[in-house]
Amino acid sequence: MTQAVNTSDTFPTLEGGRYAFFFDVDGTLAAIQSRPEAVFIPEQVVTQLQQLSALSQGALALVSGRPIEQLDALAAPWRGPAAGVHGAERRDADGEMQRISLPVEVEQQLRTELQNAMALWPGTQLEIKGMAFALHYRQAMQHEQDVLRLAEQSVKRFPGLALQPGKCVVEIKPLGIDKGAAIRDFMQQAPFAGRIPVFIGDDLTDEKGFAVVNAMQGISIKVGEGSSQAPFRLNDVDAVYSWLERTLLRLKQDNVGKEFRL
Image 1 (cartoon, rainbow, N blue to C red):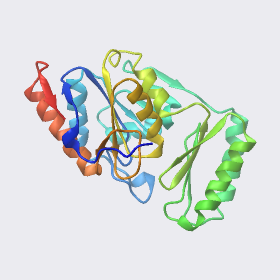
Image 2: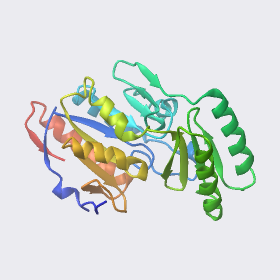
Image 3: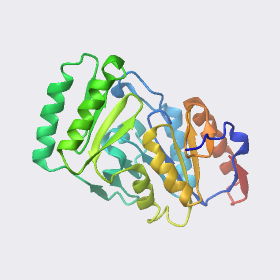
């Protein structure tokens, strides 16, 4: 992976109306919190997402490791296209849902084993997503290796599962499911088809999304520090908010499709 460019001044010129927008949530539209249930998207940012969706004729989707139910709560009252659990569930622009589920016996056995193991490590948290499990250790960094070892052993025992590392979390999810595949699926359907994708994310989980967007000659933007396949950079969540505000302003000023700069 390459080091992303550190300034938005080098962002390319866009043409209004030709782009499809994809946003990660945690660490991108919402600041990271000590526990996942404490995360929120500011009301003003939700309003701006609604406006950007309208200006792009609905070609805006949230692409997150969270379940779609949580995304809807965070982005309420906006409710649009979304990919949850890294694409294991996806809602298109018509509201049609697609879900990939684990076999019931696998989900139940894995749930019990993970709950029992993580109960021994104070400060860790198991987030159950139905078709995936997130093992959090942000509040218990001393148990990082224990959690990672547990996740690796679980994937070895259950074929069809894969690991997805993140910031102070490792997820167990169905094999072949990732944000890149979700973005690719969106781009094959209206209103996304025929547009140039723009994807903003902050974590390792977003790298496959960046790869797909890059292959489509789109614009991928990394939030925060660290190497990335994304060629462009925003420093933090506040910088994302500023980018969103500037983008909306210029789209509104140039509603007839003239060029504007991010």
